[in-house]
Length: 358
Ligand SMILES: Cc1cc2nc3c(=O)[nH]c(=O)nc-3n(C[C@H](O)[C@H](O)[C@H](O)COP(=O)(O)OP(=O)(O)OC[C@H]3O[C@@H](n4cnc5c(N)ncnc54)[C@H](O)[C@@H]3O)c2cc1C
Image 1 (cartoon, helix red, strand yellow):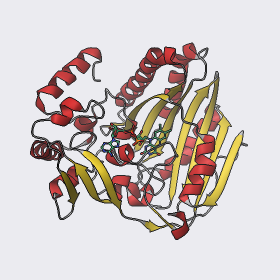
Image 2 (cartoon, rainbow, N blue to C red):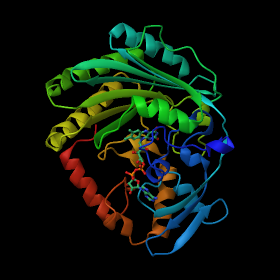
Image 3 (cartoon, rainbow, N blue to C red):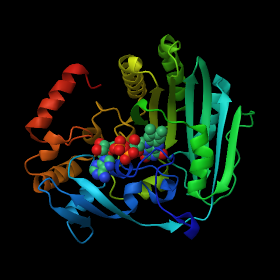
Image 4 (cartoon, rainbow, N blue to C red):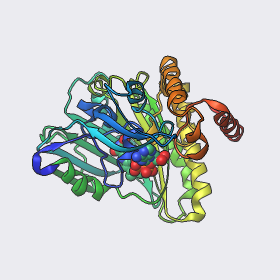
């Protein structure tokens, strides 16, 4: 939509598709002002398990429409999303990579505290990642301004890589984000939400570094701990989305590798880092319940942790109405299932026996 100077809330890297992104929430550059991508969807065309096709919007199947704001694979297959658009001629973005030192980390985390929950500025989005690749640690910062206005960088330390541009969201994705962040085919994520705490972020990266040193000799592995803010304007814009508990930051651990032989060890390592980060946040009293579906590990209890009991009951009622036989639980293995029905009970029991929930 670049030629028309309009945009909508989509992924921030080309490899992210439309379906999964919008059905798990969707954090876009515009989220600072527009909430999740799902908040911009005004109509879903859905194929139900009884092979009928329905529209879900404010007027038609309104209960399904609400549930589709975080449906995962529970209700149906979406064949069309109608979304609100907004004027967006140019946005500004800068991506910087720095050699990791504790001093640098303290400085950029402390700067980023300004972008936390109390922040009322609507146009700026900041994400920070600490990462390790080929035995070397580095810090990554991503800064975006929705009005196309260049911002001060989080530190004056000279980066080893600097990319900056002003242009359409499409151009920013292609020229800045895609260049800095390459996605591989083998990846595992784990996520939690916490209050802002610079000391915790630094400690947790160092603890994870210690664990991951034993994997330094594996080829082409990159792991990171990224932090991004659910700032006030973002939360205000989410309205019906299940973000009630998320007054803080999303932290996600991302592990990427290329060799299939490394699958088991690195999937386990990602889980180990995630549970460590969560246990440490809980111990320090900074853990929030919310788990962002699109960054979660398959074993994380997204629905049980992220939505209110009232919302859970409503979602279960919608499930019973639109997929009464639980066909999508039986035939559609991916995604996060609502805790309903015997199939899910068996699945939950299997998972519980494999990993204790913290
Ligand atoms: C490198 C990278 C960067 C990322 N950046 C962001 C980001 O900026 N913001 C963000 O919010 N997330 C981000 N993510 C996470 C991303 O949102 C999820 O991976 C999301 O699932 C991607 O959507 P997809 O359609 O490509 O996924 P898929 O793997 O195709 O689908 C994910 C799930 O959704 C279901 N699904 C897909 N399409 C439909 C449909 N039409 N109807 C019903 N179910 C469907 C699938 O069955 C599957 O269970 C990133 C992920 C990666 C790997």
